[in-house]
Image 1 (cartoon, rainbow, N blue to C red):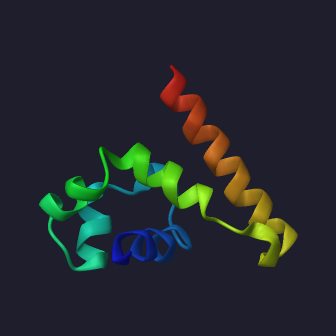
Image 2: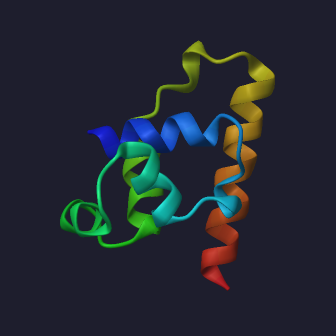
Length: 79
């Protein structure tokens, strides 16, 4: 979807911690209602986007950065 594509475009230059639903919806050119129609919250977007993510094409440094970022995000959610 446009929302997941926008998420991936934004994550290239931003930390997950820096992103918000508003930024993703602006980049996807949709409104928050559309976002919440497809996703319960931002955490669900991260989980769904991550499930479909094939990191095999990334250079090792980028792959490791993404994995580290997701681990930090998951740890923050667990608190």
